[in-house]
Image: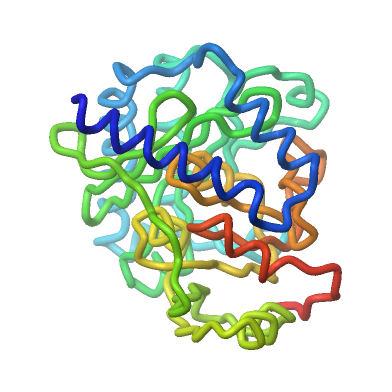
Length: 310
């Protein structure tokens, strides 16, 4: 256990060291400072196993439908994104089960309370019951469950669970970040990036934007890899990727859990002007952003220039 604590401390110190090296807006620094000063967390290490078991239960419901296409019942939501019976089954399990772990309301993509009801909640769960519905439909297996615990409309803990592998990633303030199962897990520490970078994106990414030229001019060599769902963020947390430039639409439940984990491994998610992502908005859509495993990369990435749509 002392070795795990040592690795966690190294990651935190490394992360703080890089705060002063990147081009980060003062309000983002203030946001991170607030994270560090919080003296207590409503979730503890004792909650990880029951949370993993709940995600596992939701994952089993997803897989039961995944294996029988006649039960998918695929439809399109108002924003033209797909939804299946698997999304709804997972959402139902999480909405019912999460308050037993930390007793607070649940905001789910598939069960979204009104803005008036949720705007003043000091503590709540924010859930994407199946991130990567298109990956589910195309049967790539690259779909995950995103679970974030929010305090004052900022993520303080996150867990991602991949149903097919039964692997989870989790992290939060005063907990560090880990990957594995409830029985066997290892600490996450992404480490620093080199001049050889791996950029991650969706299969529909056009790999456009000012970031491409900025990295080239700074002497970086960039390899591009495609991957579905929030697994891209976890590649960063594992040190297997360096940046995820997002220039297309996402929602708050897509980024909250990954953000909580990345912030514990020395990385982060910011808007292209360096400001933090806001949560708890009436419109749950996110602005364009970039996620990095190494905050030092932000010095080369951030710009006031306009970015092309994905």
